[in-house]
Length: 478
Image (cartoon, rainbow, N blue to C red; front, side):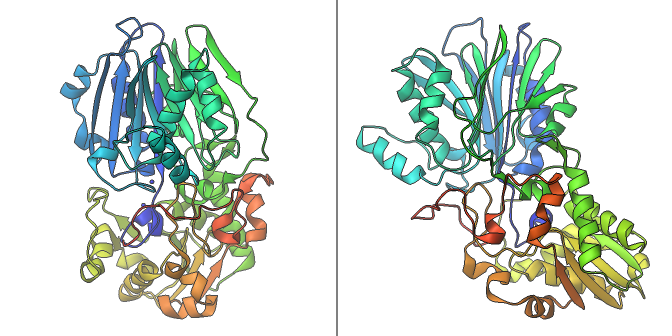
């Protein structure tokens, strides 16, 4: 699950989750590598984290795990990592999109059942989780959490009783799942990755010496010195064990609908998703903005972090100098204490400050990745004007948010989206900008080298999967 998103300065969207798995065939402990992998994926979720490991040569069913609320470096230290002995394991960082934010819902889940153990971490959101959960409850299942990940785990465990391998159990479970899921699963002797047939969320394979890795993004591979092997294909199940990499592509039946917002905001700029540079995508977004919504200005600035590359693209295209106007306090953390409305006014200033020398007396183009409710954007515009900017022209590197997301992103309901209820001119006035321009939805394919296999439902309302009849996503009173 940072700005209206990436600034997370009060009102915005949040990333969904990050997953990481590792299997060292030489028997070395993997907990410290999982820790560093999760650290690199921290931007995808800051509410909770966890690591679970097992020894492939040890007794089946023996798992050591540690989970907690908060950031990775708040939950793990060298002493704790030393207790997590095992050469196969799974890690997770979480922001709640379905299920409350509490310790019961921290992943990875560890399931003990008649065939052994499953360690499972999930990135995404199922649209039929409630129906599946009720079906399982009426067949006797007792749930310990309120997250859809436990539904997936139960389905896999139940299917495993009827098939010969855990990967076949995963495949049979996938036939019942609707929505977004990138899974990292460890059985006693295998590391398994699975991606939903639409490929909503990313998943990559890496290798370091004689160890295999699965991760949400390539930046996590870089963090541990692993070599990128390839992306897991939408609908693919990959098995990593002592015999190498094998795969099952029988579920690769859909036209992909990869989340376009991964490129605009969610993923880290140094990651590659399905072969495409996230950094280049954001540069292109900025160039398109400069073409479609030029401005007479003295400087272009980006709202950290994902707005920075788009701002550079705008500057390159427009020949207006690029500058750094915002200083971000990286030590505030992503607290999951949600301030009351009366306390939000100060939260922007705590996490973000303006360099007065950069903007004083200047006409400023401010590039950001999105506007959700509009309150944060308004405060940032005010910060710039209070610092002496004579004009602030806001440019947004995504189209307007008009519809909620049900696939692992907490785009809120329509009545909370400023663009759903206001024209662009009205939004411009509400946030106090001198002009406002959004990215044109028709030009989104240019961000991903012309690929049209993406989901833009939060902008267009064209959902690849029918939305749920009941919205069980998290609390959006942020």
